[in-house]
Image (cartoon, rainbow, N blue to C red; front, side, top):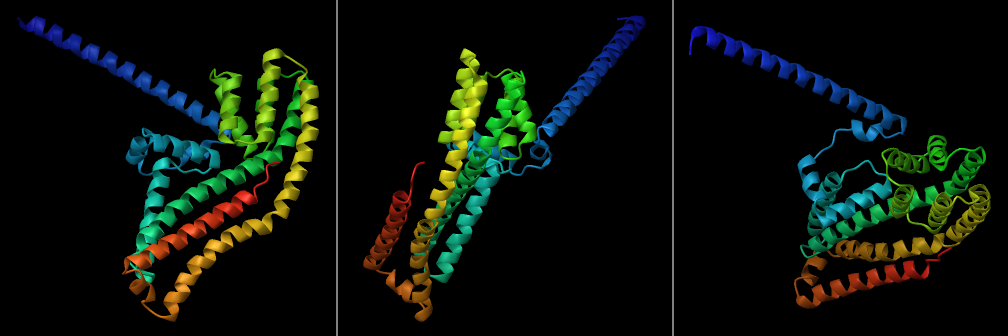
Length: 314
């Protein structure tokens, strides 16, 4: 290989490297512009906070999402509206369980450590259920206004997709956030049936199922969606008042369901306070441990029975 050939080869490789560098910079700039456009779009939909917050435990979160438990936890967190990833919630729950374990073991007796840990898991699950139910209740309270806005929009000649986007802009959370998700799904090509069905799965309620069914049937068959939505608005207003009355009547019963197990746990601290070390001596024998387990089981059964008997489906 002569010197001239070597110079030409070196020059060609250098030019090729420069071309590839220019293409790489162009691809990077294009991707950055697309990401900025996506951020601005999500910002308009009210979701920029989710993108901007720094996520913790990313590795654990990725591994957890691959499991069945992680997928169920992710769906439950999405229904609660909490800005928490499954990994963050799992780490927080483990920390709470460990703390309750140590507290129960130190303040009562070593036998109560695992029981306190199980109570921590139960409390975490109940917290998610409570957050989800609160979000569902707030969403149900906004359904009459949602139906009214969509009826006015469709009466003005707007398409159903446009009416959903308009309702997402005018309504506050949680209805505005949930409808923004539906509007974003429709914008990327997901069908109306799938997007509204996913909304009904996230926030299950009879009122929302009726609204989703009305919209889906009207979208498929092209029926009188305006009159259907106006009739549905009146029905939702009546159900809203009925649910408020039922909830007021059952508030005392619900408080009783939580007071019963609280009295049982309080009696343990009272017993240990009257005579220090009484619980530790009691739980050293198998008979005492069995009595404690049976007592906790009876309190749990009482809590569940009171909640079931006070549940009225409206």
